[in-house]
View 1 (cartoon, one colour):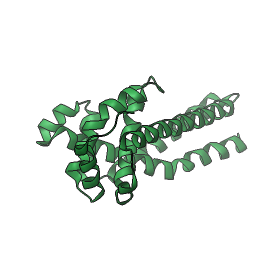
View 2 (cartoon, rainbow, N blue to C red):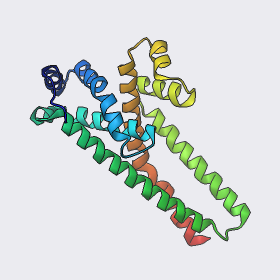
View 3 (cartoon, rainbow, N blue to C red):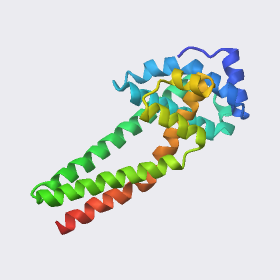
Length: 200
């Protein structure tokens, strides 16, 4: 792994003291290398980007402890690898529940199945809507422009009159907040599937 430069160390130390601009610069500096590294473990470019954003968000949340990291590059690469492993595990778990749902659906009356699928879809949409409403105004705007309108980060940055790293930061923060909210409420849907399997 390439030895970090003095400016990188200074940025890392400044970030650990709560300097958001320094942290944003670190994100810009390491993202390209981490992205190439992440693609060795996943062919999904969105998944690779999400993993990197998650790692930086977690670093920011525990920024006070970053001063004790000796090799920045090694730490970030290892963290991205671990994050990807967790993402893949969650995907496997999700597919497992999807398979269980398919098994439950077999042999069910079409009308009942249609109503159940509608209920699940409405439930998912309601939970997602609630999650979006819990975002900060800036995060919500970035999410809406990116996911619902399909705007690029460059176009969003121009519209909001902020820098590209700022947009990426809000996008990453929104992703983190949505993930936490959905994770805390995912059991509601799984319980619904469970009780449905008991009665039908």
